[in-house]
Amino acid sequence: ATRFCASMSASTLAAPLRVAHSAGVRAPGGARRSFRATRIVSRAVAEDESSSSAVYQPAVAPEQPSGADVNAAAKKRLLAVAAASGRGLDATPAQKIAASSLIGELIAANPNPEPATSPTIDGDWELIYSDTFLFRSSPFFWAVGSMMGDTADFFYQAHSHQTGIFGGGVGRVVQTVDTKGGRLISDCVVKASVGLPLLGFSPIFAGYGSVITAGRCAAKDGTRLAVTAETTTVRQDDANVLPQLNFLNGTTVPVEDVMKQVGGGEAGPEVYLDTFYLDDEMRISKLEDGSVFVYQRC
Image (cartoon, rainbow, N blue to C red; front, side):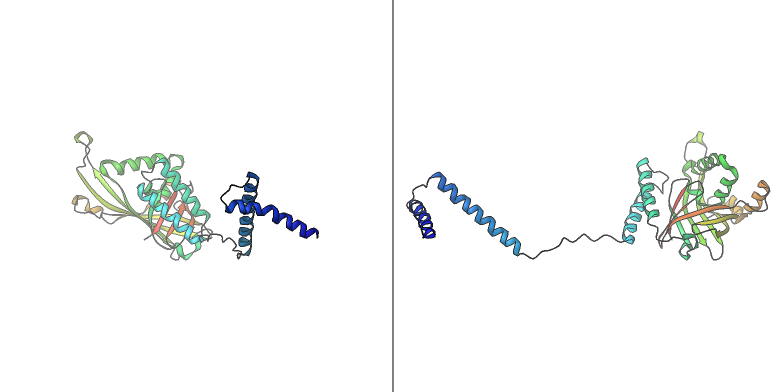
């Protein structure tokens, strides 16, 4: 009886409101708010039931790039910096910072833990970037630097000035490594010019040739090659420019013998090349003073 009365009371209270609504009469404010609240609650319950019945889909983490992909991206950016900066020769401070950061990133992800003893290191490698003079890729200058000590920088600066005036400079630089045969060869193309500053800055003549330094090499450990420069050969690639100098073409200088006489030792100075990154396409090596050379396989 109580439930029936309550039901009747609710029906009796709601009836006038329904009649008023159907007759176009505005219901009292309290009743309108009650209807609106009821609709909001009903909608919320329906949405909750809909979301609860949906199948749960766990979030999928984005696929991480592989180590090879990461290295490929870093190498591509490093190649771009190298090209824009003239192999580092004309690098701005920002480009030097960018190159150093990319080189560090690649070294940290080095896929070859012992590059000096890996067969991958053998072959022809072209210099694409350096943070020092490009001609220092040659073991001849490694040996000279070892003998000159603290005064070596002055020699490098003087040589750079000598080869750079009147439009001269360093062209293609290729380093050939043959650990099986115990040989390392550097082939550096140099453009030389001669002019008279009082008559202007255009050279009287200019030509180019190769300076080829060959030496012994052997792995000292997993990253280090010990190198001793033996000979340097001049190859006059542009022989028609100054025929009077053709006699120099093919001239070989026994640099190890010269350095033994100067240094008084039984052999030429042994210098070291450390490789910290190596894959099938790129090699990053450093000299003992920290100078960096980035090579790309020819």
